[in-house]
Image (cartoon, rainbow, N blue to C red):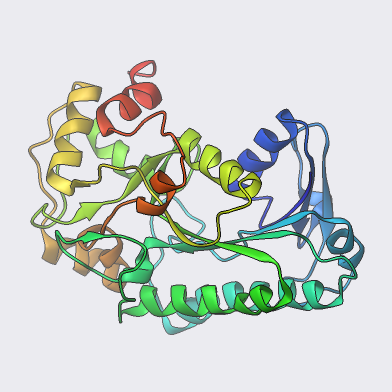
Length: 310
């Protein structure tokens, strides 16, 4: 299979590209500055795009069997600590996703033979804060900022379905990997013997081990009967208090020092909703489609990621 990945120079894109090449697929990633993209796995090539149009990469779209649209500015920001959601940053988060989707649609309309499959990134933030209510893919959208971003993100490529392209929407939870993203931020206080839960600790964290995440994407790329929205999360999300307790046990560190809600809101502003609110998202459609998780429960997932490192 010839797979084209937008946002392919990021953490998830690189890992996905490497796993696809290892299975014998051909992979091209799109980058705004391909000359600066180094360390790609053998067999993966980088092509320039502007993130807004099909200019310069239409031939790659014409040759693709599948497109994976992961492009979008980081919700957390580029630094180790989260960046505040200023009006300018909010606009960047939204525009980078919608414009990437519009670019993909421009390429799909022009492609003579259409790619068979489009995987469209989204997030469980689509559902908004939901408390302890189990949330499957048929749940209604939320109404906060992240829910609005996810709705417009998904809508940016909806037209692909009318072009007879099989479209799968990836409503992703928290991928657990020490290579980047939010998980290292969660681990650091525990390593410093200052770990605990956030706020009241009752908010659910829909997590997924990075290897299950990548396996789910490969499964959805190659399983022809799948289409529509899928929660890309492990089957057993936990409240933050239980997540923290499990993390502390695996690291052999205490987990009794909570971060009060007011302190997080003061330090982070609106972005604090990422850790203070959550969704008990469950991967109902993945399970019904026959996908098997290697790490369905948090304890073994954390042991695999952390125990060897101590």
